[in-house]
Structure formats: C-alpha cells, structure tokens
Length: 606
Image (cartoon, rainbow, N blue to C red; front, side, top):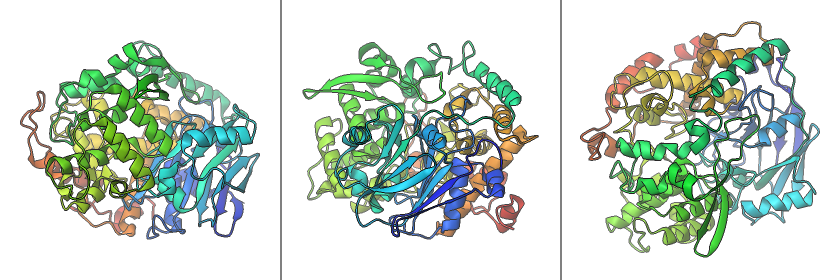
C-alpha cells in the first residue's frame, strides 16, 4: 500500500451494532487519493439513490494521505455523505485537531450506515472503534457536549470531540458537525444525517504519532519548498504579516463591499453602507483576544474574539468572512456584537452559519413583501428576533420548522422560490456574481450546491494569486473555474487547507504527495488529471442520484437585475455564455451531463 495511509477503514453499522475493519483498495487510493475523492467513491459503492435521512445513507469521516503528517496545513477532515439539503453528494471539511488524531489513532476513515434505536457515540482509540451509549449527551448542545466527554474520559489534551447539537438531532437540513467547539463541517446538512442515525458524536483519543513519509529526503525537500512560499515576505499567508494571518478571512469585507460584490439584504443590493463596522480591521481594533491555529499551520488565520451582547459575555472563534456577512450585511445588520453572538450560537446548536443566515434573510424578504401570513415578520437588521428564530429553528418550533428546510424550502413554502438565494437548495456564500463573475459560474457548476470553495475565483479576481483576472470579465472565467475545480478536488483529497492554494501550486501538491506516498513520479499534470477525475465522479454520482440535466443555474436576480453598487453598477452575471464555454472545456453535453465516453476516458467506469 502507498505510504501515508494507515490503510485501515472502520465500517460501522448502527442498526446491527457491528464494526468491521478493512484495507483501502489500492486502485481507489491511487485514483481518488483520500478524503473528498475517496469518500465519494465509497458513497458511489453504497448507492446514489438512497434517502439522505434514511438508514441506508452513508456518513463517511475521511482523512487524506497527508493528514496528521508534518506537511503544512494538513489538519483537515472531510465528512462525506448524500446531502438532505441538496440531494447531491456533499463533502464538508473542518480544521482543528480531530483529523490528525483520527490518523494517529490508526484510521484513514470511518464509514457509518444504519440507524441506532438509542443515542450513541463512537469511541476511537488504538486502532479500534466501539459503539457507546450517548443517552446522557442527547439533547445537549455543542458547548455542553465537549466538556461532557472531556470529563467523562478525564482528558482535555489528547482528545477530540466531533459532535452535533440539537439542530442535528432534529434534522435541520443545514445542521453541521462541530469539532472542538467551533470548527465546523458546515455545508450540506451532514449533521442532519448524523441525527437521523441517532449518532451524537465521534470521540477520538490519541497522542501525537505522526506518520513517516515513504521517502523522507524528498518529503523534507517538498515541505521546505511549500513552507518557503507560505511564509515568504509579502505573501498573503505570511505569518503575522500577511493579510490572511493578520486579519483572517474577514479581511475581505471592505474589499468586496468596495467593488460592488458584497450581497446585501438577500442580494437586492451589492454593497452594504456600513461594511466597516463588520470588517476585520474593526474586529482587530475592538474585540480580538487571541490567534489560535490548527495542526501544522504557521498561518494562524483564526481570530478569537470576546463580545458583550444582551448582558452576556461570549468568547468565540472565529468571526469568519462568510459568517460575518450572512448575519451582517446580508441581513442589513451592522451590530458586530450580535453577529459574533449568532456565529457562536450556530456553533452551539450545530448549524451551518451561511445557510442559517441565508435562510433568515430569505424570510426577511418574505416579510418585506408581506408574504409571511400567519407568522410574525422579521425585519432587516432585527438581530434580537433573528436570534429568537434561530432558537426556534434548532427545535423546529413554529416558524422554525419552515426555516429548518433551508433557503429554497422557505421560498417554496411561501410560493416565491425566486427569492431563495440558493443553488441546488444550498445558500450562496458572500460573493455577488454581478461583481465577481467567476463566482456565478462556480456556484452554478458546484457539485454540492452554491459554494465558493469548489473554485475560489476571487483569489484571481482580487489579485491574491499570480494568475490574475478582471472581476468583471466573464470570458476568462470558464477556464479559470475548471482549473480551480480540478486543483481543489485534488487538494481536498489530500486533505490540505484551501489557503495553501494562495501560494502553492499543483507542483507543490505533487511533490508533497509523491514524497509521503512513495510514488516515484507524480507531476502537476497528474494533479489536475486526478482532480478532473474526482470532479467528474461527483457529477456522475449526482446524475445517478436523479439530478435533472440543465440544473447548473443561479438565482435569476443575479442574471436579470443589474447591480446598482459602485464598482459593478449596471452588471449582471453572464452565466449562459460562460456555461457554453465551460461545458466545451469539460467535454460535457450542452446541459452539463457527463457522457459514458468521458467516464471511460477518466477511468471512472470500464
């Protein structure tokens, strides 16, 4: 077997309460790498037509071959499943230390099927997984569950707890898994799948036991080269000096608001009049208290803050760009204390911050137009009532039962699906595609629903990476989107933090992967070819799951309503023109369908 892997997968059937162990098929490891790619391959084997909230759906907790090694920014875990929010395959990643500890405990992944009759958690330790009773933890939110298990095992240092909150228990369709209080696998409703199985938590106990590279000399050289660009003078990732390290992801707020690419009031506008009050600069000057980091990461982009809100002191990590936007400008709210409070609340009840905010804003537009019927309206910027609706959502009480269905479900419920700022049912992130054209194509063609991380075109459009493009030029975006989708499919399968891509390229990924696994020769071209295979595998899964041809679209607001914001004024998103060129580059049909010939060419089918 290739180096880097523990070559050990645990299969857990919660219905029969059986745990079995197996090796990874080496052909799969070579074709799909690990984490995201390998997880999707296991899901395909399990069956694409399963009910996402039924016992037959698989919930896969997956590492990559670089996870837990000395490779920089290698502390990521992918949770892969069929999404109850989108009906597609989804993978959602979190940082912190749980991924490294899973590898140190002797595993590359845990595959969970079935449904327990009573609440359970999985205990992972010394190459074994056991199914344990979680009755005492059921009904608790994340900030209670983490110390509950730390006290139960009398351990705080060498333990990681990945858990769902009450939103997951109640199968809110955008419920998340949370690691170590506030590192979330947020997107796609993976937490709802956990709740449907009565699986409350994964508890991992392990001391540091870093895997050794198959080729130590090449590994040392490859890591040195990657670290060199990560920490280089002037790099966006430069520790304590680069924009990402100093300000975190929220460094983008003033930038996107300034160019008319900051969706506001559910996308009715493309900039927010008081973005400064939500910015990283404001955070650093007023509420920043710490700069924590993840396994093997010198960048330390996390920004821990402390706020006072409604008589409560909240210390939380972290005011990320998307989270600050979704409860801030997107909701017409400039009260940063309330924004931090709501982000922490999402981490506690266990929901995706993006979809929680987009869901609230969908309902705010319902209220704006007087379509709310029997329910109390929710006004723009009303942060106190936003919090009340969030509480109701976690328990599916009253209006909360509608909100729990996600943005598209809310639009459908009130007979106005057009106001749902969602793709494939999943809420958009914090980039207006009228001002950042690449994001429109990225949202439409993302295999897991609206997503900025399948192809992070703002890195190019805002000049963060060396490959620079004009944010308002659509003609350069089809090739850019395909390139980044393939590159990120590979890095997500290693599993490395996305922020490596700001300075590292396919050649860096190839060198580090080859050194750890011991593959004699692996090039930048191999990286992109493997990423293309993984991206097409996901599209194939979705086709088999029943997705209709022609599903690659975005809300009509971005296609038909010109921006009025400085920087993008008069612009719409030219998606049809971009799609035509993109499909040609992909070798797909005019409706985005992967052909049998393409699947054979990529060795996905025989």
